[in-house]
Structure formats: structure tokens, C-alpha cells
Length: 413
Image (tube, rainbow, N blue to C red; front, top):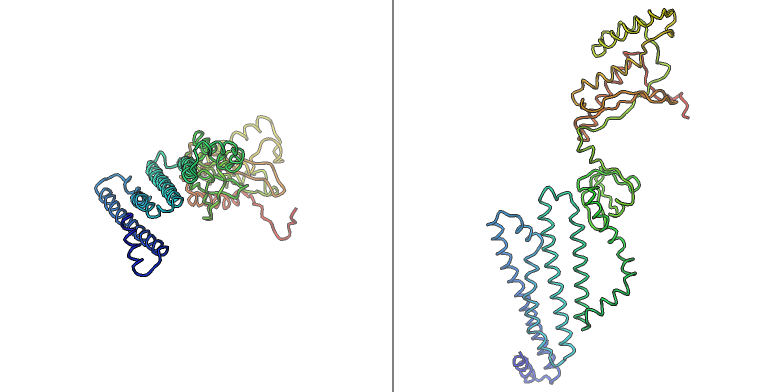
């Protein structure tokens, strides 16, 4: 190398340049030449390694090699040969400047450390993507653990780089970092909390990727699409994405709808508001008309016989309906609603089916339907719920019931 430099210097001196400029231009041309050769080495190395990886990917059935290509592993491997080439040939070019030559060696050694870290990161990302291909790991926060390892890797790498560049022992930097531990804990507070939260989430199986969760305080209501060390991303139903710090899944309350998704039905819990002045005892003529309704015919006949026997045995004066036992239109409608739900093909008959009366309000008496829809898909669930209440709303008139609605004359209280 020195002979080549001297030839350049001699050639330039013969062209009329003084010794300083001949030395400067000669070494600059050699440096430019070495940088060009190193780039060519990088280009050829990357091309060859890519061809090898592509051939392996085509021959093997495993998707691991495809993921290696996806995460640019071949490109990162090809960084080593050019750096080694420059480390071998570049420092001697400026050997007449010992400080510069030593600094250049240190920089190339630091670049080697960075290249090693980048290669390890590519392998870790490949491993992460490969693990996620298995169904049992698809909903686990693998990203959090990979990120923790990467932070630790970069922490070690930065210490090594500083040690190489400054020429000081690694122990010196570790001692300094020990003194700055309080500051580091403050700076990496969210990261540490996120890591602890990720571990607790995994161990306790609190949240999985794909779960539908609701956090009203954070304007989040949708599916979890990723769990990382620092944040959890939730795709809301309006397709917006909300990012929440991971540790908030431990410190704050939220609703996870996974239990509903894994159960045999999705709950229907809605009410009809019945006007109180439309509720009354049933007379015999009205009861005869209601016996034509098949769903409550047998119930109505049995209950009618039971009430008549009770009133007769008690010698009840039935000149007024209020005396003795009576059937009401609201009570019959409740039984009709339950019978309708029990017969409905999309209502799970193995789960609770109930039509109950809630406490009266200023808007009437809420008559609540409590049942479980067999189809848990949101769109189908809403359609089925709507169909059920369409039928019940239309049925109220046959029982002489009126649903509450706010008219322009009705004052709002």
C-alpha cells in the first residue's frame, strides 16, 4: 500500500505539484479508490447472498428463509466484508497521521459493532414473525419481549462503541451508568412499566391480540391489533386507531369482550317503555280474543281455569275486576314475549331467556328483554335484535298496550 501511495506522490510531483499537495491528492485518490472498491464488494456480496437465499427459499417448504429475506438479513450480512476491507487497507493510507489512523480504526470497529447489532435485530425480527405464524402465539405480545431484548442489545452495543471510540475500559462506563441509574430509571420509566405490564398481561392472559376491549376514558373501543413494549394499539369501529400506554392495561380499568366472543351467545338486553295508563285487567271478551294467539293459548287457558277456581272457592265478588285474582294485559304480553323468544331460531335456548318488568319511570314501565343471540357477529346480532323488537313492538297493540314516545306537547323533565 505504501509503495502505491509513493508512486502516486511521485507521479503528481513530476507533474509540477509541490510535496504537500502531491501527498494530499495521492492519498485522497487512494481513499476514493478504496471506497469505490468497498462499495463494489458490498454490491457483489449482497447480490450473491440474495441469490443463495432465494434458491434456499424456493427449495425449502419452511417460511423461515422467506422471512429472512423479508427482514433484509442478506443485506445486513453483506455489510461485513466491505468494513473488513476498509479496516485492512484504509488506515495505512493515512499512517503518517497516527492520530487520524487510530481514530479511523476505532470508527470502523464501531461500525462493525453496529453491523453486528443490525444483523442480530434482523434475526430477532425474523424469529418474531416466524413464531407469530403459529396460532398459539399469534395473540401473544411477542413484540414486547423482542423490544426488551433489542433495548438491552443496544445498551451493550452503545457501551462497546463508546469504549472503542474513547479507548476507555468498559468498567468505566458501567460505573458512570451506575451513578446515573436514577436518571436512567426516570428516562426509561414508561419502558420499564410497559415491560412489567407485558409480562403480567401474558401471565394472567388479560388481553390478547384480536380481543375487543373498551376503555371509555381513553376513547378506545375496538380490536387490539398490536401489543408492544410501550403501547397497545386498538383499531376502533370507525377504523381510527387509538394508542394506549401498555401499563394502563394494568393500572386502569377496561372491558374485555373476549368472554362474550368465546361464549355460546351474545346478550340482548333492551327494553320497551310501556305507558302506565295502557295497563289494565283483562275482561272475558278480551281473553277470548287473546286465546286465538297460539303462543299463549295453552298458558292462557290453564291460568284462566286456575284463577276462576280460586275466585269461586273464595266467593269473590267479580262485579268489579279489581276483586280477587285477575290477568293483566302486561302480564300476558310478558309471557307472550318469552314464548316468542323461546321459539326464535337465533336465540340460544340453553342460556337465560327472560322478559322482566323494571321499576316504573316517568316515561312508563320498562319491559326488558334478556336473552342471548346465537350469532355473535356484530352486524347479524344487530339485525336479529332489531327483528325481535320489530315483532314485539307490533305485538303490543294486540294486548291493548301503548309504548311511550315523546310528543311535542309532552314537557321534557
